[in-house]
Image (tube, rainbow, N blue to C red):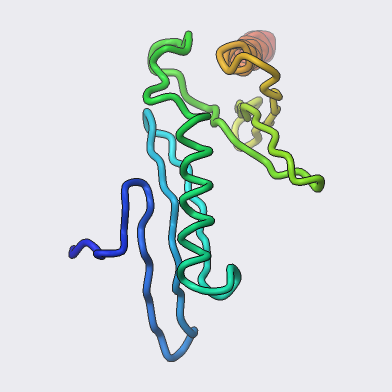
Length: 148
């Protein structure tokens, strides 16, 4: 695959023309850290042109560079922890809320999800999410023992 000359670090230029579905033109900000992926697309048409879309993408990228650590290994993660993700949500007032979303299977084919708001320390929210997920697994095991 050929690299687009308008792409930069963590920003990809996307130019796709398709007669059937129209065209997609803009910049995609992308980060991948420890098997987690953050992406956001900045359309040329929605941002008033290519230059403004690139400027918005750079601003978002720089914000993420400040918020996302180079690696997540500094967090007190359990070995091979899974079932959670780190998310951001844009609020109506324009502010951004970061939270950790965890999911757990409470029975075969049925899962539950719980979000933990990051207020201050990311490690605390990740630990709370993983502890909750472990508690759900223990409850499922206890219920399975009672039923057998």
